[in-house]
Amino acid sequence: MKILLLCPELFASDGGIQRITRLYLRALAARPETAEVRVVAFNDRVLPAERLRETLGSRTGPAVGCGGNKLRFVRAAWQLSAGADRIICTHVRQLPVAALVQVVRRNLRIYLVAHGIEVWRPFSALENWALHRTTRIWCVSDFTRREINLRVPDLGDRLSVVPNALDPEFAVTPPAHLRENCGRIILSVGRLSHADAYKGYDLLIRALPLIRQAAPGTQLRLVGSGDDEARLRALAAEGGVTDAVVFAGRVTDAQLRAEFARCDLFALPSTGEGFGLAFIEALAAGKPCVGADAGATPEIIDASCGLLAPPGDVPGLAAACTAALDRDWPAETLRHRAQRYSFAAFQARLAAAW
Image (tube, rainbow, N blue to C red; front, side):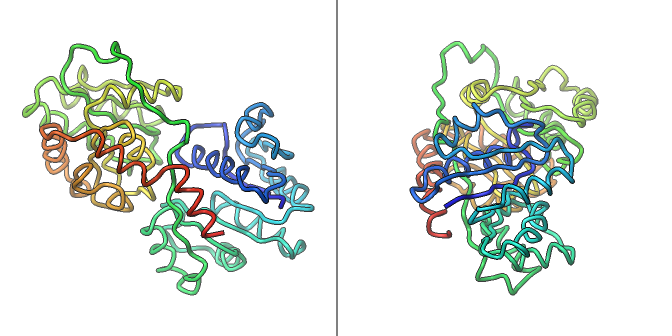
């Protein structure tokens, strides 16, 4: 079986969708019936052969980075679809291209990975037409499945829930020197961009003075960068917590694991999580989580591994973080929760929904 995967990005950035796309590649390459996996990435300028081989091994096929050029993307999708059996789109924006290709190459079967807010909305006529040409839509959470089903009810039998998973190489082994002599550390991870304002980093900054009243010396570490960083820094200054908010910037995979190792609590009060991969990574590191009672977050966080705060509620978020910092969380219980989303479990769910 030859597979063509269409995606927004693979290596150009390191957000959740990009990491999950690489996980799909790894899972597809591991299937015994897979002969070759081809890739077309919209934003990547180049797709380094050595990085693809690290993921796909001997199943590596032709790969094209389009550098944001729409015409090149459509052309590459058409060319690489020749002889393919299946097209997998990791974002709904690429789905109409796959559907147009299928009009001519009628033997192709189309699959879509549906993540979150990109499908929690009404669809255009073109998108609706393309959705009805899919064989299966893999929803990363039951919340996302319900949101699609609400808008396009007749897709019900094509919708399967295939939760995201931990990278099989993700492991946290904290070196002793990582923890400085300081107060408690709350960690949050993601792109600090205007487009991702729903993640709630500003809420965490506003909640920090209240948290520090109950837990003096608490520090907030924000890992990531983006065009909203200046506003967030100004917000920290306005709240008098400039010295307590650390903007760590973009980090390597090893540095990210170190950040999870050094923190006491992971918090992401997002109102638009289609899954919440960072929650799973925190749990795998044995760290409790605080999230918003919104989106798919409640599917991951329950009383055994964290606390939920009312969406957009700064005092409620501060209370949840304070309570989580005060509670003793058995690390093994948290790690066991994360194992529900192991790579092996992901492979099994994907095979069942194929």
